[in-house]
Length: 241
Image 1: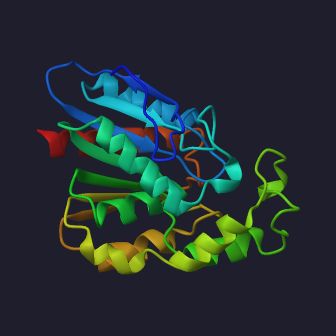
Image 2: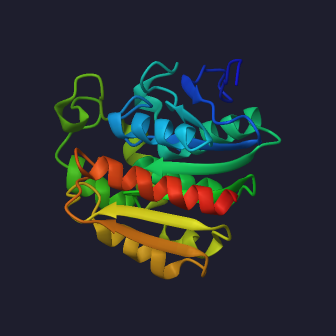
């Protein structure tokens, strides 16, 4: 894949493309979580695993994150849903699998519930209860003054707070996901509880699977990375066969 991808604001989205065997138009788009970017180690490992199996993968940093243009303060779920739409525009004609981690998982649920161009969906430690996540992690941070997890490059904005509250939860959209859906979650995730995945799994239609990675944390560290990668690659290959 070549050429720029720009969102509706005209901001360039940084991406890396891992080409598979080149025999199909299938592509897996991988989106990251809050304060993350396309270069998180487990994201790179997943993209490489997919390409080695013959499936092309595109990992992207949402606007305001990583080397993408835009302000981090504007990086809300709602804006990232629109960013994903711009990525889908650039991939017109391809059969798309979307893999979203954490907040990127919420992005995937919202986009998939209203956009038929996503034909297969994967949630990795997917955020469901957006209001609950904010209250657990950032309720003691003053918007416009403090930062997420004390990261100086990740200021907490009022836009982010308002968007998380307005969405509240994406659980109500689960019943509208009418494509095959894989949910992967670590049993020791202390950022997004495994119960988030269990909740939407129970609400989703029949074409679904919940896979728990024993002992894995929120970012599938160390030994959990190959377990997650193998599961997603095998599932994607089965879906695209």
